[in-house]
Image 1 (tube, helix red, strand yellow):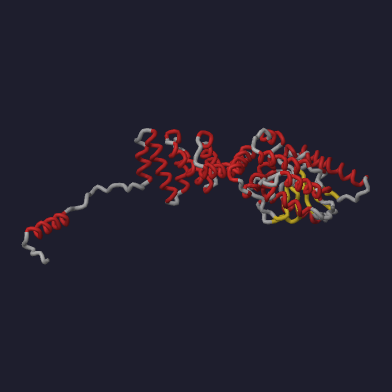
Image 2 (image 1 turned 90 degrees about the vertical axis):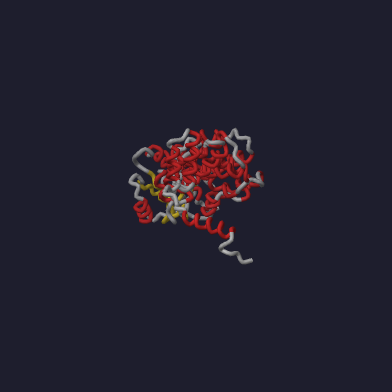
Length: 374
């Protein structure tokens, strides 16, 4: 039906249209709801609980906008005690994610404290535990790192945690390991039994793997029985190598000099006993590592005709080796570094956890026994 512009309905519609066209936009511009700067300004004027919520919203928005450094600083300074349980979980997940992405393990540990007072849903708890364990490892705190990762594996039975768990257990001195022995978790006790096997080995790799096979038979359902940690598997490469000349990198000065002297004396004694027993024994060349120049150390080792290396002992030097793609000669380090993983080909770490346990190598005789062909 055609409507005449002169009719009352048309007149009413025309009036509305003209009124709409005649409206002018307001000169006051409202801040959009997702403006983090506005939220932060409001937080400064709000009561503590409301301020904490506003700052959490601002941090979340900044993170989604790709402004992670600013988001991290805000999240770290939120008074999480003012948040509800659900908001605290959201805050912890955000803070731990930002801490990981920005290489701030302290922030991840801060977020992980939630687990002491709250029980988040399983998926959230597992994610926080995994991030917490990695962060504690980066901060060179192997005992709580191992505890967090073991707790996580008890919950999810994941074999992917074997290498991170072994990295932390391997760094623990004997006194710290004893603090885990009271665990009621069967898998944790089995991990400790495996750690003892590797640490207490005489240096005979063939015998060690026979013992590990027995351990796997006793714990067939254990994640590490299903898939051994890669650093243990790497020891298999030492079997069957007939090493006749070994360079030993030990410091002659500095804070580790006394430990190094004990190691050297033990290795010399072991070597002498081998010779007296009729074995040929590998020749040992001791090279001072106090200067810290790894390239120079390996050049000297090669110049002397060494086929393999024992050492270094210093954690910083081992960390630098872990970050290389490969080492010039097969190397059995006497410590564990601080890198998240050992990516260097031909770098092995066997049975020593830290400087204060390095004297164990004196009893084992180092690689002299390890390298003997079966």
